[in-house]
Length: 82
Image (cartoon, rainbow, N blue to C red; front, side, top):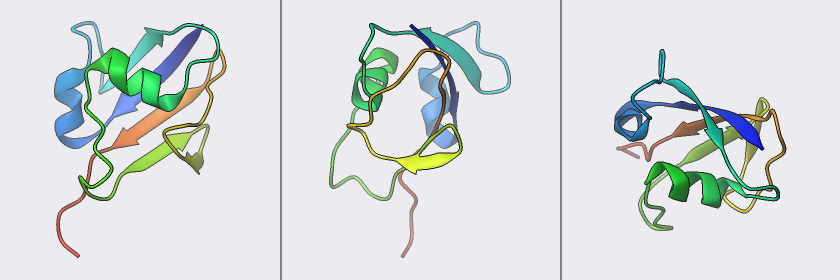
């Protein structure tokens, strides 16, 4: 399956070289989760790293959310401050 991913902040360094405007299409196995997408992009996930925002098809989700072909995923890194 393929999902469109848009990365923000320092996460953009994990995009493939063919990415345009912070977006790329990533191929994943059927039934993959957001966590599998992070792994495919080489983005480490640490629970205590800070505030994350994961948006799938315009709805906030979690790392264990299963993805479907054609999903649009936006990933925001931990935010500093409080």
